[in-house]
Image 1 (cartoon, rainbow, N blue to C red):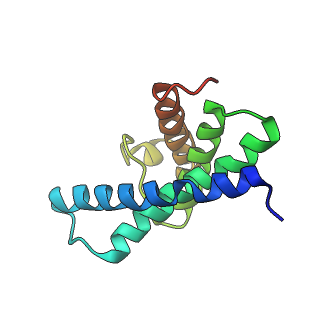
Image 2 (cartoon, one colour):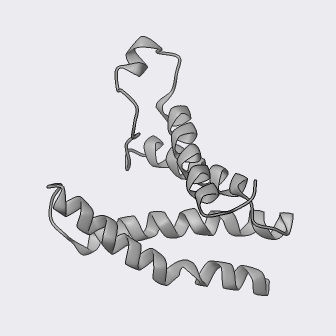
Length: 128
């Protein structure tokens, strides 16, 4: 059984995830990366929704919102997205992994996506 907080937390980001999924998919098309498809919109929307949903239990356990929850959620999404081959790692030169073979792409993805999630949270006014 979900608590009232969890129910609200899991249902509130649905509409914004779908809207932003459409926006990001349209930006993708505008940059010349394929066509606008329902699958593309659903992929972006699902990623955004999962990013928000991962934060719900952390917020309820700690009793407050925190930018660290965004860091962890973003890091997890980056880690598993790269591990499964669904997303790439922005801002990282691919030759980094040839120069440092012990460095795993999933670990770098966790750091990069976690940092992006944390930065967006702090810009949005979330406390640490």
